[in-house]
Image 1 (cartoon, one colour):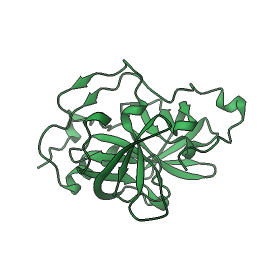
Image 2 (cartoon, rainbow, N blue to C red):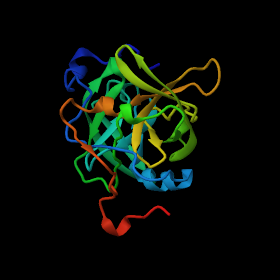
Image 3 (cartoon, helix red, strand yellow):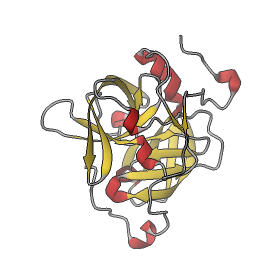
Image 4 (spheres, rainbow, N blue to C red):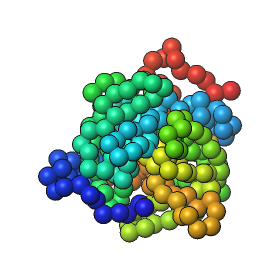
Length: 231
């Protein structure tokens, strides 16, 4: 569930910033024609990681050279987790978390090779295409597509409802628009009915006044030699 009580001891929870937000991430608009699903995957997959914890696993998405977003129900009471991508492993610290909103922020002590930009919730339109990338049941880098079904608010937190499939293990993964901008962190599903999947709006992780709007999304690959232009 999205809003579940934390099992973290008070001493553990006290080691994190309680806000579940970060500064310094630029918000970007959806600029240009839609990409095909395979092009979106090629553009964003390098920023999506498996998160390994003592009691299971989930996903996380890099939004800067050293910062990733995930769900608090993925990391649980741990202050350090393992990130895995294509057999490479690194440690990440849980530096901020707001359990009741299911927002947790991870930091690494190295420069990540790829990250994605964040698009504002208010700019997202119901009916537009969306792509999820995560690790359902541990199946690393699984992509699926659908649409934005609705925009909702739960207990003051902005959510995106999507028909793009989300399964256990996808929690903390990315919901991307058709240009490869991160619009949500996939969080929970409703098991009654069909295609009722939800993501925390990505800009909910941004501190107020700590981000700026730009008109286009630059390539977020750290190494220029590894950048690919979508065709």
